[in-house]
Length: 172
Image 1 (cartoon, rainbow, N blue to C red):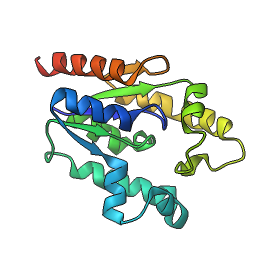
Image 2: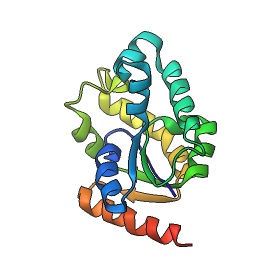
Image 3: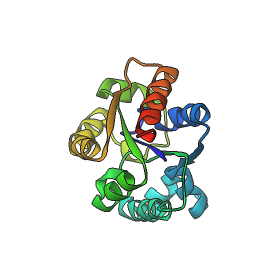
Image 4: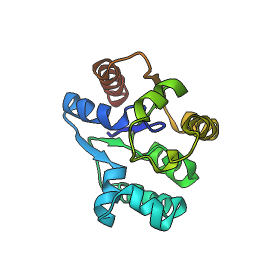
């Protein structure tokens, strides 16, 4: 009985996870924070010193460690967690997966002032978002049980919708 939040950076996974966990009486797990804690450094530092592939390996290890060890948790994941097939299988096996989706403009608005997004450290962040989304959207779709468009919804509205859907799923 876990609720897993997937989606691109800036769609609200971490923010929603906290409110949702309170609503459900669940714990919150954030795979990005778990990686930072296990490595004693930031994701930016990991990307800068070891690169994205090394980060993705760490992400897979952290996710794999959740198999059988967590229940009644809201798990917020990094935006690229679905880029590895093994991760999609794990995510689907440990709970109900919600894809939080947003349009490019919303994402760009939400992340434009944030310097902690290593994949957007580029001259044209909009193009980078479009390029990454085009490759990831089919993966998010394949991984998710439910999709929620977050552009015009408040955190409370999204959390409520997820909580009610999860309650239905868990009562089956």
